[in-house]
Amino acid sequence: MKKIVKLLSVLAVSLLVSISVFAKQVVYVGTNAEFAPFEYLEKNQIVGFDIDLLNAISKETGIEFKVKDMAFDGLLPALQTKKVDLVIAGMTATPERQKTVLFSKPYFTAKQVIITKGEDKSLKSFDNLAGKKVGVMLGFTGDSVVSEIKGAKVERFNAAYAAIMALNQGKIDAVVLDSEPAKKYIANSKQLMIANVPAEEEDYAIAVRKNDKALIEKIDAAVAKIKANGEYDKILKKYF
Image (cartoon, rainbow, N blue to C red):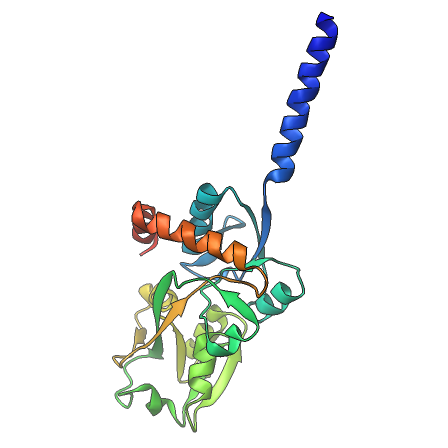
C-alpha cells in the first residue's frame, strides 16, 4: 500500500510539472539587433532596452519570450507568416503598418535627427535635405521621412553602421536616424554631429498579429504596471 501511495504521489508531482510546463506560454519575438541601445549584440547575446523591457513583461505575465534576430524589413512579414508572434525593434506604429498588424500602446517616444560630417549650415529643417544624398535604414521611419522630401536623394542601407561608414567616407551628405542610436554613433567621433534642426517625433510600440488582441492587452497591462512600480524608470536610466 505504501508503495502504491508513493507511486501515486510521484505520478501526481510529474503530472503537475508537465501541466505547468505546457501551461507556460512561449512567444517568439522578432527584433533587429543593430539598433543600440534598444537592441544590439553583446558577446553574441541580444541585449538592450527593449530586451530588458521584455524580461520585465515576462515577470509580470509569466510569458516566456524567445528572441530571434533578423533584418528590420523582414520583421513584419515574419510576423504575418507566423515565423514570430511578436515584434519589438524600436518600431513606429505608422498608419500604414497599422493596416496589417496590431500595435501596443506606445512604450517610448523618440525623435528622428540628421547626422552630418561636420557642421552643415544649410540645414534649418528636414526640407533642406532636398538635393542631398541622405542615408536611411531600409524600412525605418527615417526612410519614410526622407522619401517624402521632394528632391532628396535617398540611399538605403540594411544597417545603421553601414550608413555612418558611407557618411564618413563622403559617399553621402547626411544620415537620418532615431535620436538615441544617433547619439551612440556620434559619441566617439570628432567629425560627426547631430544637426540643430527641429526633430520629427515618433512613438515606438510592440506589434502582434491582428487577431492576437488578448496578447497585446496582457502586454499593455504589464507595461502599465512596470511604469507604475518604477521598473520602467530603472531600465530607462540603465540605457539613457
